[in-house]
Amino acid sequence: MPRTRLPITTIAVFAITAIATTLQYFFPLLPRFERQPGALAAHEYWRLITPIFFHAEGWRQIVFDFSALAIIGTIVERIFGGRRWLVLYFTAGITGEIAGFAWKPLGAGSSVAICGLLGALGAWLLRNPRPMQSRFGGMVILVGAVILTAFRDLHGPPLLVGIVLGWVMLQRDARESGTAAI
Image 1 (tube, rainbow, N blue to C red):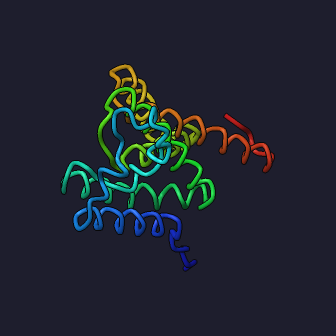
Image 2 (image 1 turned 90 degrees about the vertical axis):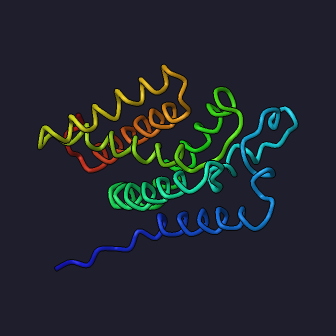
């Protein structure tokens, strides 16, 4: 039986996020790093990335985000690899924070970055010719991303970014390996 590699990138980001989230309960870190109205106008550009390491909405958010990161992160890392995982996670995270500054200017959480990973998984499912349920699952993610974006939910744009980046990555792999691209 072949050995499965540990999802090192997922574990590392999980650990960093867990440390930051834990520290926010002992030190006043959240006001310094969360998304806040006027922060970008005040040239606090770190707030485009730091909110994904903190959680402003309590234990339900923490449990959901950490569970999603562990599950989706592991799957996406096995499909795309660690480096691409980082590109997907942080590009989607920044996209979600930009949407957040426009639509929900106060907050923090890793869900927007995780949505990029879910979007990439959706792209992989859309490209999977069998079984048909795979394509259906990918289509649900795509339609959900469009609906969330239309309703100005900050999770929609990172889902779309994840789908597009994931699709481009998969197309490139298909071209390089000489397999038929969908």
